[in-house]
Image (cartoon, rainbow, N blue to C red):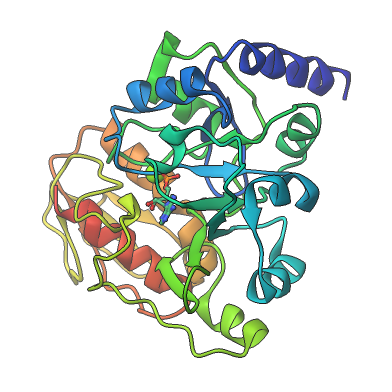
Length: 310
Ligand code: AMP
Ligand code: MG
């Protein structure tokens, strides 16, 4: 406990100096900086090698602070009450007098916001006078980090501090929902669409074809271990890493279970950890067995497809 407090103080120290800090969240680790500062947010883009046109998600701990920057509506309020803090990001209208840095939105009039569910990060946010812009703490297009060690893997000594909050409980990015016009899913993630539908009583769709709203999570290549991936495979080659979703007898020895009984939520949690492990073992290619395209399976397939376009 004492340790946690001093670690939160360290994170605050660097953030107040406009530096980037790795922060734990239930989805994946974030590379955080003061969302009100041009200097601090510029560093996020530089470190991640992220194109300027990709806007950032801003993390809050209270509605009161959110309302300083954004307009909220009824859909938002219902979803907020049911899922926050939690793995859901809302795209809302930015208020004219908001202090959010132009870097965060790429000059747009909308803002993506989230209430992360990790006790250390919530305590940290409560101690700051500003919200935190925090994309995933990985070099752009690479595998997202789900532990402090993963963040170290990505940035080494290039970042000043990483707040260690243990392994991310969800292990997959947030679901992004735009509430600017009619509700629309922009990215599949930690909250299933069917649960969102139930709360807002609206037949919300995930439209992959629509390019109107720029979302890096919608780019063709993303989440990549930088090795070829073959999807929907029933037998792997001898020297391939084989990712499986349920237990079975195998002739090859390089197999990795995301789950042993098709538990898709559990599999989602293990996805990035497994991809990173396989990459470290220097396999030349990855085979993945067919994953049911429902619930969290949809989000897993979305990430794998983008990872496979390397
Ligand atoms: P990440 O870099 O993993 O944190 O992903 C951030 C996601 O939030 C990307 O898919 C962004 O495109 C999306 N995002 C951030 N701001 C906006 C916005 N104003 N409108 C639409 N998507 C956004
Ligand atoms: Mg990311």
